[in-house]
Length: 103
Image (tube, rainbow, N blue to C red; front, top):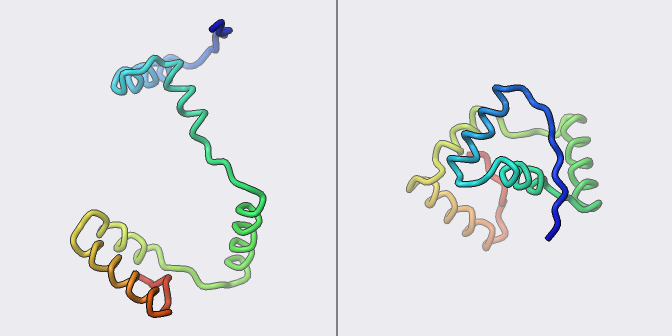
């Protein structure tokens, strides 16, 4: 496979950070950057439209979950309490209950 190479100028500190990160992952800097660029999220038009509708609703005053509650919920990830809440939500959903609950 014939790959065209290009040189790109970046600040020394950025180059050092990229080299260290690539080495830690066992990749070349080129491979690391290709992976970083290739992992961008691709959304369909329907997904973008849904996000736009949700954002419009929030701007128009639709309630959201308070930051402190999100932090508290994230702190449970990987703990027994997280597993318990997941089971509770699954049961509520199966019974037709509210799926999105405040933590």
